[in-house]
Length: 462
Image 1: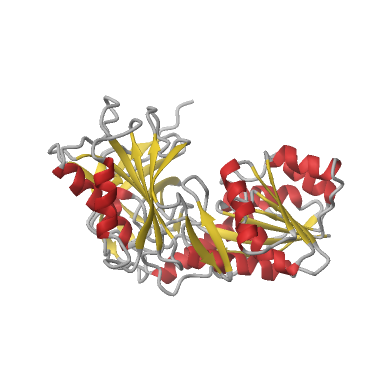
Image 2: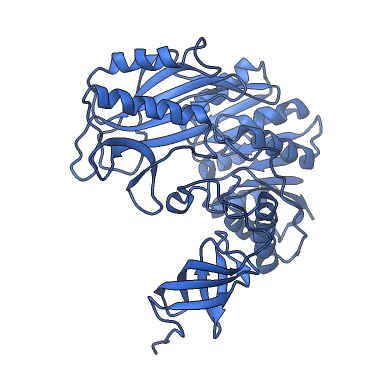
């Protein structure tokens, strides 16, 4: 039976915004039919254009705000609607923090037996220019000029950006300088349609505390014209003499595949050591081109401090750090426990984690490279290790069933679940509730003005 929507595509309607969705979009209803409209805020009355309908819901575009919310902010970015990078830029910052808490609370209310009250989101004092990693595509604008910026939302059209409010300013300066050099020297940019062109991306990683900068030039081949001249040009412009932050290493990443993946596995160091360092709390961390390091180090410190605080670690604890990356959580927790075991599938990250333990003179930590599902089982069955505290910080898809079964089997006293995706976290907490009580859920705003939210949850054995 075909359901006929009470609204029609390409027609306009005046609607009340009655709620916010999980991506921060406004929600309206017409005759019980749900419509999602970006850039709208709960409590507003808006004129909208219907752009798509399905049997169950539709999508609208904001045309005019008839009644404005007190939470609406003046937009300070000319490209935010097209780029989609920080889609909550139309809300004042405190309203975004409240929204993120409410999104997590709604998931808890819908899914968990224990309808625990989610704590207020911990925000930033200065929620601007917080990102320490930037990825800039190099391509052509509509006039055929080489440009860089950011892909327009859900497309591969590059929007030239003047000033991004969430990236570190030096990232943009470096990317623009690379474009300038390519133009001056008639070096081609990559074209997806043909697979031709010398340079594909510029990736910047920054040590916020150390002021060290890594520049990765993603090349569509083993080499590109005048690469050594470009290296010299970048160093001259971003040395310690000319800038507070200085480029300490430049890497060429070779990617000849027709793929959306930015970095492939082959890296050649053109300048410096091939890595940078940064500091989180009192610990120093080595960052390689391929290793994952949180993109907001200020809030990462807040997040890890909160995770360690709720864990209430004891000196005789054996801790397990699943999806440990370069060892940031395990190393941060190591001073409070007897022993830490970290598991991570990315080989480069484990090498960096071992190096990080050495740099920080930490001897009570062991890092193992392997798939969490299999390696966790081996630790329990072959090495007979019985952790009483487990930290998990899984990818967006959450925990796999085998890992959940292993956690339930080993039954640690405390489980600290750190998540970048509250929806999959709450799904997993539901499966763990048979043995565990969810004691605390604390959102942390790692990505201001975006709908994304990091969450720390404490689970205690019943």
